[in-house]
Length: 493
Image (cartoon, rainbow, N blue to C red; front, top):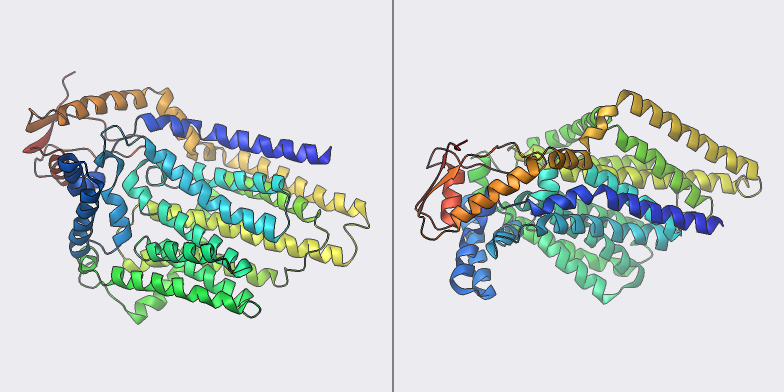
């Protein structure tokens, strides 16, 4: 009966998580390319229209990389991703973006989590499913920017896909360390090579975890040091990215290495780490309710494991996890440039993962201590007492947070999407974008006049063209659709 109840809870977790993303997926019918999507996709779109050849699109993508490498930024793999945004191939293809980004978030989180919890620690699959769904619920519902995390290809591709690659790399690392499997080594080479040209946050996360894994397992598993090869490939890719002339264009003439700036960045990163947790507590207290729930599931999973002696340094491990989270602030602080919405998104993702990792280690250590004193299995009353304390804390914390932080519900992607849909704004946006696309796709119209739209599109991303024909958005839309000019006009009521 206990096994049956656990499986029922796991199934319920999947159901609740699925329900929570229904409004998100519903909005897929309304999303469209905007802003940078057009700028980075201009050459590839032209190649596709002229030839319908994937080879020519690839060549145009390389030209795009060269253009932006010299004029704006060095993240060559991200630029490649930008250049193949869905509307390059079809004006009706952008709906796939939310599905893709949710897929990368779910798979990137689930795969390594499953291996660590089920295969390494011995958690039941049902416990893993419940924890996994809770983590994914927090990540997706409380993205600081739903635009850059789910709906806008250009913003999400630069952070969500590298997050996926970093997490996949971590999965390949531990699998290779455990088995020396060739396919895991090849997988780590591919992921790490691509990370060298992607988001600096993801490119920092994977090497940090790799070094920690080598410290932990390298002494007994000498073959693990072969993973320094994919690390080297990533560093080469990063060096290529760092040396891009475009970085100085974007970051200014002062952009470059400074020892003083590096040390000050470290201090500022820790400060921002503490400061941001305070913001999470104030603006999104519900995530801490879910953390308490996850702790309860972790505890119940550990008390079913008869022996586990892997947890010897709980406080050092928790400090280490906090340091990894703080390290995610470093690239943005050091660069000193305006940050996109994808940066706080990935910082938040790493915060969630490191917090859960800290809880797993701390509760594993605590259960290990209890078992070593023959408390858990020899005294069922003590087992119930400890579980009762955790449940009480969970209920008390939930009540306090709901009393003083009810606005946190409005911060969820679910709430934002439902309100946007229920208000009729989503349907209105879809109608106006269809109208706009019909005008832009009309080859007989070369000087395009687009009726004005509401720039505030809730959880969706929309960069409006302006009444300035020379405006940046006007120019990239003009070039993408091969027009002579594009300008906004007042909408006739």
